[in-house]
Amino acid sequence: MTGIDWSKYPVIPGFDVLKWKAETQAEIYQKIKDMTSEEQIAYFCKGSEAFREERNRFRAESVADR
Image 1: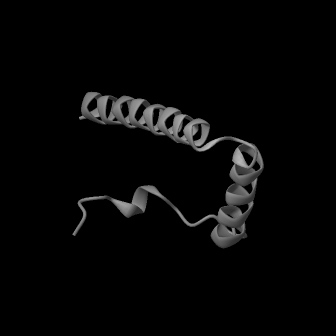
Image 2 (image 1 turned 90 degrees about the vertical axis):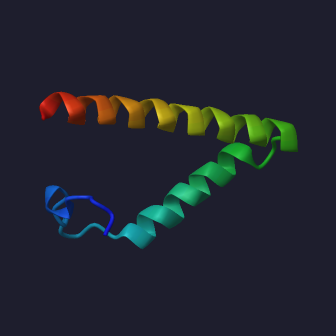
Image 3 (image 1 turned 60 degrees about the horizontal axis):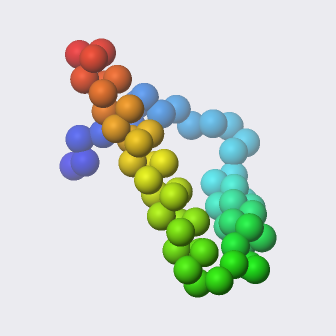
């Protein structure tokens, strides 16, 4: 058990997650295809840092809601 309350995340009718994933991957490929390895690493590091910041904000809001 993950401890996540999945009832907070309703099904979105008509949303195709596999199509969304493929489109997102294609978009990322277009952004990084001409980058050097070092530039690609920096791109993904920047994205992961932004994700961590968003996750921390979400966690802080969740704690504040309790």
